[in-house]
Image (tube, rainbow, N blue to C red):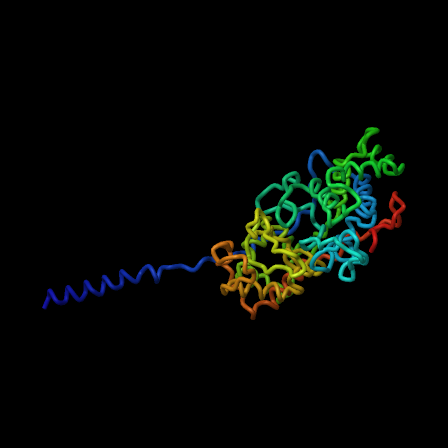
Amino acid sequence: MKPLLFSFLFFIGFSVGCTEPKEDKKQKPTDTIELLAALPTETPAPADNPTTPEKAELGRLLFYDPVLSGGRDVSCATCHHPEFGYAELRDLSIGVNGEGLAGSRTFRTPNDIPFVKRNSQSVLNAAFIGLTNGQVLNPATAPMFWDVRTQSLEKQALEPIKAFEEMRGHALSSDHVLDSIVARLNAIPEYRSRFGQIFGKTDAVTSDNVAKAIAAFERTLVAGNSRFDQYMRGDGNALSPNETAGMNLFLQSGCAKCHNGPMFSDFKTHVLGVGDNEKLPKSDDGTNRTYAFRTPSLRNLRFTAPYMHNGNFATLEQVLTFYEDLAGGKIENPHVKAAQLDPLTHDLKVNFKDISLIIEFLNSLNDTKFDRKIPEKVPSGLKAGGNI
């Protein structure tokens, strides 16, 4: 009988040994609050463009002055207006040949200008673009635009001026647009005087200095004292119980794998398969034609609807439902295959029952106290803000 008993015990031991890896298999740990952070209380600036009150004020005038546009009817503020948190409250921008503001803006007729193909992002806290956990921000390498095609606020500031559908239009050629704008500014005595005082030379009105002034102004547009920031700085009562629960669900759902750090963005590009906006004549294939787009900040979402790179979702509920569907394997964009999706999408665990609490937490990231000052007039004599 002993050989039989030994064989039986060996079989039991072998069977248990075969199942041990399954029993020891551990679930991936939930992300923790250490992935999140309050915004810094000091605003960084590049060494070659320190922020001064005079330079920021010049930048404000330029930001609102439609003289920078080909038809003298569009300004930076047309699509980044303080009333809407320096965003726009519409899916795709209407730049050249438009009239009205935000959701009420329409093309004038006749019209052959296309929509701007991506959603206008807020300029609030743009000074902190590129700031991630454990890293020192280098403003000169901050990744700009949904497709990170350029770096730094200084370089970003000139791109809309050069873009046909945003500010250039038919009035100026693409080869000479910046030279033409500089000539216009040089013809205005107040601009010549301000540029000279700030940049210290007689030929101070240059496209580089235009960019520096606008960037300096944008770095003053800070909204960094939300209730979440207060909570992270030590005020345990700044968040309600529901908001705290929502924060924990935000972390458990895997949202913080991309939306982390002080700006709630890793500033990397990810393929998510968001559907195309039907207003566009062709599919927007994103960064290097990969359908990847940069992670947006989640700060001040109250002001920045609609959401995603093309404004496809009108509400936060729709955004989170999209992520729930994505976690379940649904891909909205027929041009994107499952193999193209960012691997981080496999870690998403967004449940419908948690959405309302997560949204309560996201609303704690809003800070309504920011600079809304609009110049009463601009040096060109045109209407501040453009045709809005």
